[in-house]
Image (cartoon, rainbow, N blue to C red; front, side):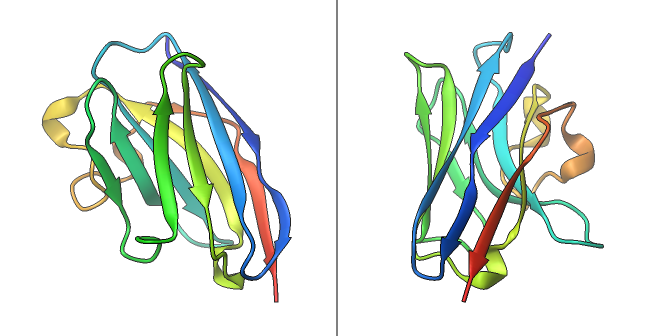
Amino acid sequence: QVQLVESGGGSVQAGGSLRVSCAASGYPYATCIAWFRQFPGKEREEVAAVLTGTTRAYYADSVKGRFTISQDNAKKTVDLQMNSLKPEDTAMYYCAAHTQLRLGCSGRAVAARDFDYWGQGTQVTVSS
């Protein structure tokens, strides 16, 4: 059983940085692990994703160049480093995973409904 637990997040001023971490366990060698965010009244959108066991990473256009997703195999975490944060990045951030690799891992190929496992979420607030 895949388990995901997020940590990090918090509040920061615009232009600042935050890091969120997803402690993942119970997943097979090749799993798509992604960070989603959800704005009030909106559906969850994929921000970044990695295919574990590979160097493949995917980013939404809105965060490309500012956010970096990485795997820490020793700690078994998937981290999202968020730099140059903007007020419009304010959202609840979730870690999610799916193992149906035929669906893909990029946000252009999969949606929230394709992910079977979710963490509880962590709030990120960016003030202007």
